[in-house]
Length: 311
Image 1: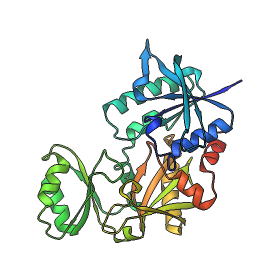
Image 2: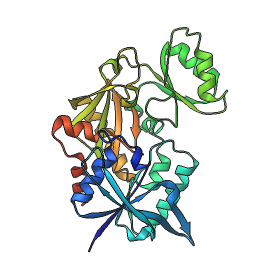
Image 3: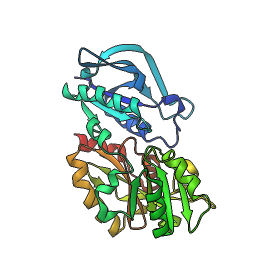
């Protein structure tokens, strides 16, 4: 019997061939004999309570000039699939939420969804980390600018960021009596109407923002330390950081032990946590990256480990 895998992702033509983690997963699936069906969010629909999609059969190649080939659209019930990878990048906006409802319908019909749709809704990538306060730096989430000012006055050096962005977008550092503080807080909270996060600044960011990938709550052997480029505070590859693989420290493993059981309980099968110094700062559940960099530098096959764990 042919195994069928679906993938929901951003347009495959626009991915970064040398870095894309979803592509690594698709190569592995194809090597294991899966037929792959490609969807974008707008291709999914519900009819009479059943989930369907305008699918295109997909083949992937190890060729930076031609890494994919798509067949014509066909309408298919998502229940025809054995497995669905939800790999759409943030923001987790209304359309993303609606997509998880469609995927949840497929899940009720027996399709395994990675990651679990309900948990994708529940686990905001910034706020979910606060479920493990023993692992986190001092953190506050609020839309009240006065509360944020008081936190800033108390901690003196903080990082502020929105709750729905990725890749280091709109991340600010405020120090001492920064005259731009009010402007930054007004912008992030939309003048006190939207929640934002502030965290105590962690100086160890100069050594890298470590991305640790976990499969079914178990960490890989190495983290990718994303070291900010000179003159930059953000440890994001999208912001020009350099990725350097490092073995997990004892503290890294302790953080993973704190987080792992909850990930398993919530059906968050493939997750990337971010650790700066000794502190957990984010838990990435939507479309964690860094497979390709860790595979290349450490001789790993993380997508292979993922499919082994699925079986």
